[in-house]
Image 1 (tube, rainbow, N blue to C red):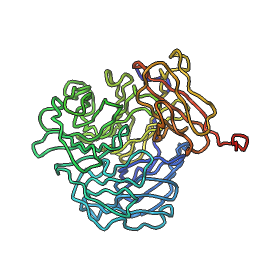
Image 2 (image 1 turned 135 degrees about the vertical axis):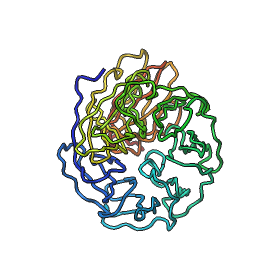
Image 3 (image 1 turned 30 degrees about the vertical axis):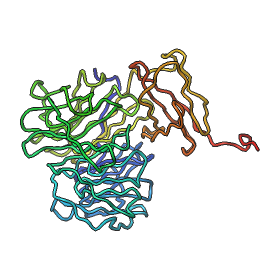
Amino acid sequence: MISAFAQWTNLGLNEYQVNDLTIHSDTIYASTDNGIYKKNIHSSDTVWSGCGKQGSYIVQTLVKDYQTFISLVQLGSTNTTQIIKSVDGGLTFSLMNSDTSNTNSYQFLDHIAHPTNDYDTLYFLNHRLKTNNGGITWENIYNTTFTDRFIMVNPANHKQLLIGGETGYFSAYLQLSNDFGYTWTIPAMNSFFSGDNAIHDMAIENSVWYAAGEGVIAKSTDGGENWFQLLNLLDTTSPFSLYYTNIEFSPVNCNVIYVTGLKSAGSNRVPLLFSEDKGVGWDTVSCSSVIANQRIRCMTIININNTDNVFLGGNGVYLFKKIVNNVPQQNTIPNLTVYPNPAIDKLYVKTDKSISGIRLHNAFGHEIFVEQTEENIISINNLPDGLYVISFTIDDIHVVRKFIKKEASPDNYHD
């Protein structure tokens, strides 16, 4: 099932431990045990530029723009962190908050959450803090403390916050808040796993949740109460005994899912699993690691010219490229129109069928928050000029359309 065009590239940073990868526009940023580094996403060489806190252990970094970074920096080897911010491209950093986090040995997982394209509303897992104004004021998060592994905001519902990990009884758990983290419930998570296990990461498509954990990839359609397993390593002949730590959709086709993680024992391979049918079937691909005992810790994906660029970070950074097939074409749905194109301030989706899961991406594959002024009317007034992709689901068919955002000319204005 491997596509006709798929290749691996080692992108360098092999001497460092890469904890987090994030992409802004044409640049990928790596948070490492020796500071923050960057390089152009189109470059296949191994040259990276230092851009802040060299010599420090950086756990995770949000990149708002080329100048504004929000990072977690580990204090020595304590597995505790502080929140720092740069507004000059990493030349200098200052404390956003004087709080020191709780201890967590899984710092490389997602410990900062924020709504799509909103860098003022921030949630910090082990600090148990949140801010909705970029750090001017802070509030506590009053969730139950277990062995927490990750925190995220539901991309389809920015009121909903999710925290997951492992209880003291060696079982996976989730906590859900539907009011920005003020009150919480704990789903039963029936059938996710039995025995020693944790949940490390999630990907959400409307009401369908996919989760990655210790040796298990699972799916829920009822808000996390009940799960069925898509993959269990105990039932496979996979060469990788993985603690799955990262799960993501293709930016242009939610049928395609990527999963990676830590090898439970030393390995000189870089592992990646992908499914092209929403988790029904899985393929395993890998490449040789420059460093022995490879342990992949992070993943980020963009789509360029119908090719998913999957960046993996561990001991170094690796790139896997895969053409994404079966993206629906323009005429697969009758009586469907997306207009105008080019568009200035609003984009209209006209159809006689029900639409769900509207998502918007820029030309680099980055998801953009969708503001619907009315049903099937998308506000794009604040977007920069350029090429964009809108996708949605109609009758279980994933539909993709390209359009151009164009600035209004004087001729468009009337008294």
